[in-house]
Length: 398
Ligand code: SF4
Image 1 (spheres, rainbow, N blue to C red):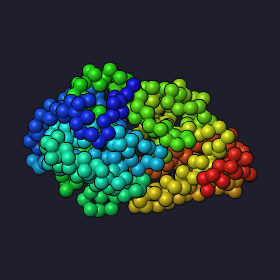
Image 2 (cartoon, rainbow, N blue to C red):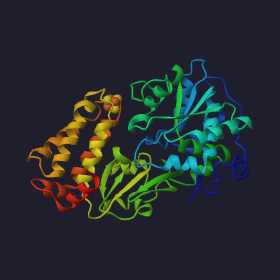
Image 3 (tube, rainbow, N blue to C red):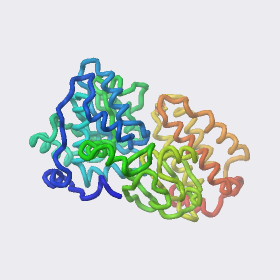
């Protein structure tokens, strides 16, 4: 089933309007109020596709509730700083006007006076599109396109709001819905979420709910990797085995996600709650298959080394905990660690979560814990000497 990607018009605004109809703008509300679309979004049960799966209507209401008489800001988050995710870039390439429609609809629903689209890649083509849309009256507010820094954490909401304000792209304890860009209440919405919102505004909540699950209606974009990354659109709840080839293990939710054994993952539905119950996470819809014959421990060690280098080193877990996890896991994978390394890894991964100002360390701990469980046989093989698959994986990943 394809809703966002079907009949994509690319950058052609006339073709987009021919296929989807004009964007149904109703007029901006006063700051502090909520437009009618917010009720439709609540009825539709739309949840954020950026990884948190938070109800979009509640987020819109929270921003409106903190406006304090000043027009809020809308930020479209297409930073996609997770290396295994390709869906937002793909969506902006094939259906950019759906995302921009959603941004304008969200803006008028909360009475926003500024709209920013943040992308990781070159934003010049999107900037031309935004100019054309404004000239032709498709957007009441001219959408600014900003190219953000290419860092893992740059897409985190508080980091993004701080960077748009001219600061470093580092997570802070600031909550953008209270005080974000320009010190104003800021709605930060993932690009895919806003594209869904644009379709809900046109087709209604019942149509949106006709796909997906009761708790998480609609479709989602999935980035399936190994080898290469493909983007697919499927109803929420589609079994993992229907989107990905079988493999030794599957990493769900990306670098801050969790491994599941390949024979168990195939039957699990791609939906946030069932995956959480299985010890994994859906995140931004990332499914990465570990091919048979590849060492999952060595592969995870290279990911954790990279993640440890991406921490902002502002909090204890990033400064000390993640480098220690990376060191021990690399030692284990290389067969050079002592017999106590597994207990040390388990202990650290258990105490790190919840201690940083953002969830980055929690994700790394989850990844390490799942690797020790799913690759338990490899852990045994590595204690003392390298396994053959590890040697080959090390040669590929460095
Ligand atoms: S936990 Fe790490 S990434 Fe998050 S805010 Fe603290 S130092 Fe930055």
